Length: 137
Image (spheres, rainbow, N blue to C red):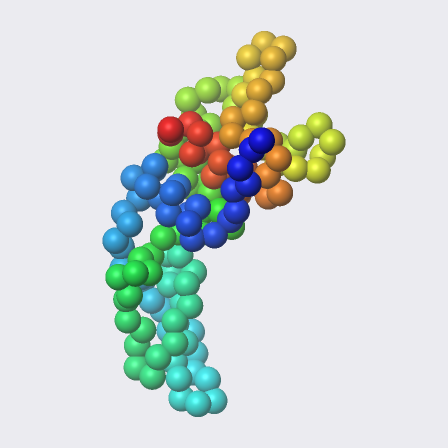
């Protein structure tokens, strides 16, 4: 029986921990516009979080800036690079399973192909996160 790993902040935090990404980084807010009620909208350049305030957003210590590794493919590849996921073994690749239904990171050794993490992730970003966690634990 395998445990289902779901994308979201909990998984993003776990990936950040194993790759050594700071867990206490402040958001890098940029102004994105005003609403009809004179409320400013902001987006974090680093993680994509949204904030709204009359003047400027504030950083909540309970909500640090952690990249969305489990839902953003660019962030997932950045985590893979930091973890050495594709650089340590020449024959490690990201791809779909044999039925073309789910994603996984696979390692080829001669004629033997094995999954790093699970090979049943619904998205490439999630497959990379699972492999990074397995590689680093």
